[in-house]
Image (cartoon, rainbow, N blue to C red; front, side):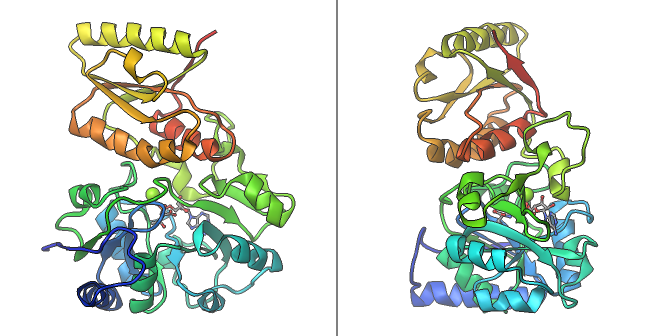
Length: 355
Ligand code: TXA
Ligand code: MG
């Protein structure tokens, strides 16, 4: 299959006739059962018609994703939610008012018309209403319900630019909409609204504190930051090794000076063994490291910047054929919780704690 890439200006709020025509064409591809990758404010998605079982099967095939891992259905109008859920808790309406459109995915009991092929056999359905205008327009032109996982091959870091979508999806899908770099860089927060209190299954830009302010008490799935809770994560996708670069990644935690010293000793030893080394560093320390590739993800205080650059750093290490990677550790509060959750998964929970 030939994959066509079309460009839409990054952060376009309104569309030129050419852009509008491209989005209509993309919408028609999805209506006809095809697949289109598109930007959202979080990461690029790989979209198909969420109400068409064949489209969902194609998404699993294109991603190489196990079919017990459910897809989330993107909508562009709150009214459309009623069609695909069988219960609409009052608390969810409050959260929708506060955080939609935006990077929040809520889980509901599904309506009958949502195929089990989309929900991975579950009786629940996860729904985001993204704020990205290109995503919204595409959803509208596609008939209102786009099932879209992140547009990476299963297990790879989620793509934050179209280049990485092309790398993973070229020849597997009909179209890629290149809308430049995404704003947030980590996937949406997922919260299960079918339980009381609601439970966060995946941390993201909408933090636990922000949700608690609107919903009162919220729980967090214990598996989010621990490897050894002995429990299966509630979001099926979170159990898979994920976001993983090809080489080995270790997170190093401790006092800044000790971390720099430890990492430099490790990279020196690795390089003596002819291994190519990479480091995920903060602005504060970047100049102190010695390695084949040092990626600065931002200042320690600027978590939004760190979030936006994390997946790209992991992808670039692959491009540079890095064998061993080390990362500084980050705060695990607020947005830091989402950053650490992805980093821990990328590292397969390999953490060195220095005294
Ligand atoms: O930001 C995002 O959420 C991106 C953009 C494209 O929207 N999408 C995304 O989709 O990250 P995906 O499929 O890569 O991650 C969705 C996660 C998976 O871990 C999946 O297992 C979980 O949501 N999930 C989906 N439906 C669920 C359900 N009914 N119950 C529990 N977990 C669910
Ligand atoms: Mg994903």
